[in-house]
Length: 114
Length: 115
Picture 1 (tube, chains in turn orange, blue):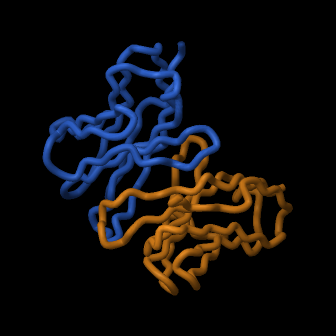
Picture 2 (picture 1 turned 90 degrees about the vertical axis):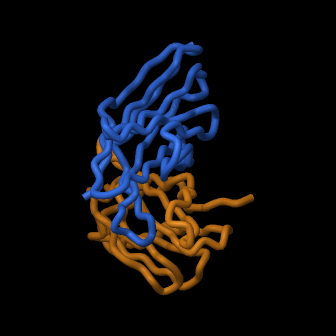
C-alpha cells in the first residue's frame, strides 16, 4: 500500500530534550515536506526537500532541522524543543515532475513540549 | 503573494442537504487551487484541483468545486451531505513562483453533518 509513515503518533517531552520524528514514504517520491498544524493557523510549511541531499526552509523553520540522506526518509529534528513547538506535525510527499501532483500526507505526530 | 481565505470556521448541515464550504483566493498570475480533507486522527487527503479548463471540477467522494474567476472563489460543494463527510476541509493555492508546486493552505473549515 502506498503510504507516508510517521513515527511516533504521540510524543510528550520536556524543554530542551532533543527529539526526532521519522517520516518514510514508499512511493519513490522526490519531494518531501514537513508541516505543522495549529488551531486557527492551518498548515504551515517547516522544511521541504526536492531530492536526496537537497533541503530548503519553508515558512517556519526556526528551531527545526531536517536531513535527506535517502530518498524514502525525511526525519524532522528538534535539537532543543520549546513549548511553542507543541503542535501537530505532518510529513507529506509527492512526485516532483508534475508540479500540480497532489501531496500524500502521513497521519500526523502530536507533540507536546512541557 | 498567494493566499487563500476560508471565511467560515464551521459549517453545519443536515444529512441529505446540499453543502458548501467557501474559499476565496488571492494570486498573482493564474490560480491553481486545491481542496484537501482531514478526517479525525488522520492526515490530509487530496479531494480535487483546478488547474485549467472547466469551471466545475469533480473530485473524490462525490465532491465538486466551482471556480469563479470574477469572484476569486473556489467553493467546495456536494449535492447531498453524509454524516461521514464530517471532517476538516482545507483550501490551498499553489505558489505560482515555485517550480516545485509549493502550496499555501487556508485555516480550515470544520464541517459537521448531523443526522
